[in-house]
Length: 241
Length: 226
Image (tube, rainbow over all chains, first blue to last red; front, side):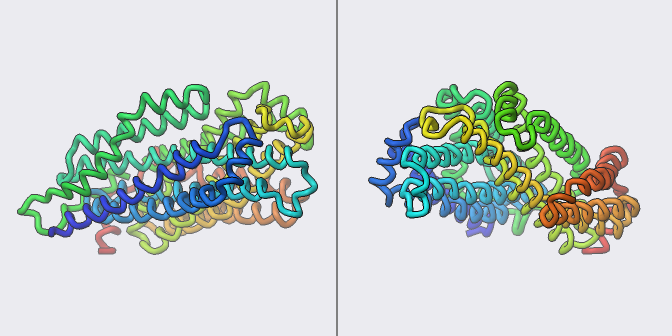
């Protein structure tokens, strides 16, 4: 197998593991346990299914680690197209992972408050639950913020795919549009919180760009013309800076 | 391009500061809360500016790494890492920035607390945010010092700019530590030091925007390295 093709398959496999694990922490568990605006019900749910909640925290953390591995795998695949853009892609992912990692602290704080140890007895139970609910809400908002980066990294990624010559151009364009899809979601969450769910449905086709590249990398790999033995010539020049 | 991004970053961070500062009444949680709720969109815009500033700074970091790599690869990488860490630390403040809104909107579940308690928590969040900024700036300061050194050593950018930037970076670090160690004296120093730092960063920004790098010399130094 050609080294570029191999790098593509590895990136695809890492991508797949992220796509499989992410929805558990991000969508499934919150939809099961969190009752919006009702602290007591949420407290009951989370205490009844504490292991599930803890698993979602773990899933969050593992997901960030996979995300960094994915960025490195893609960097290896695409660095020869343009190093600066590849670096920018990795930087966005690294900051996104850092923000995401810290964000899990909000869920952990909520769990501590819900459980209510000895030292928390100075608060009444409704107050504890309310504080915990605040942290749950903060976690949700942390995800909205991270969405900015889930979008941003796709722009250099899409551009590199577009220019690569060994991956389909339309997926590159799709990824770049996908970037603006996430940005639009984040802006909606920030300024028009009421219409977030509708925006999510409307933007769904745009957000599938990531799934497309994942499947392509995994199934088709990279189509490297036979004449090219090594890598493509770097296109760096100070004019890009 | 690096210059343009940097300008965007400085403009938005100043903008975010300007949006927030008239809303915050020191040590008066109730007045601050009333201000924030009265001009909520301004507060949200301030948050957006904060976020954009972080994002554009990431771009600045990557491009500066690229531009200065011919001078010293390892040192420009070091600077870039400090920049990344700084943005990531700033990222921690983004959620804190939104906390006052969540607290003050008074959702159903928050009725367990009195209004006064909620306002006090909101002001605490605002203060925490300022502290996080102070921590992040240590990393930016170190990044500025290494970039300043590289600019001074480079043949394709004027030496003065590098020295100015290094001074600016040093003053970031000093002012930040002064703030933590002597909270009473720190703010006075801050008023004196911020202009110095802004001159350092601003002059390089303007230079990159207007003059760019000397492409011929950049190529020379880049080829020497290879």
